[in-house]
Image: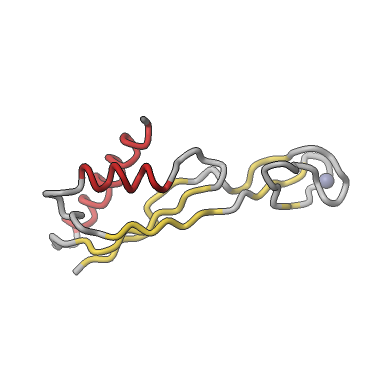
Length: 113
Ligand SMILES: [Zn+2]
């Protein structure tokens, strides 16, 4: 159910920016979602359709930009993109690393009319 809270956050941010820009009609909302986050596009879209009517974002198109996961190896510092099954450094074969990207979730930009 946490997609609902997240979608409410998105709507609040978009409304604030739209109001600040003096517009009442948002046409597009660009979201960045890390592949490591558990948010599902369809759920966010579902809640958005549910709660956006009557707001400045009514009828706006959601664009989902997935951010690939990037690790930095603990052992040798090599940066790499792990797959779901393989978190092994391609250089030294150590397992895992520090997460550089893939956990993000934010509103990248909005388009207004
Ligand atoms: Zn390594």
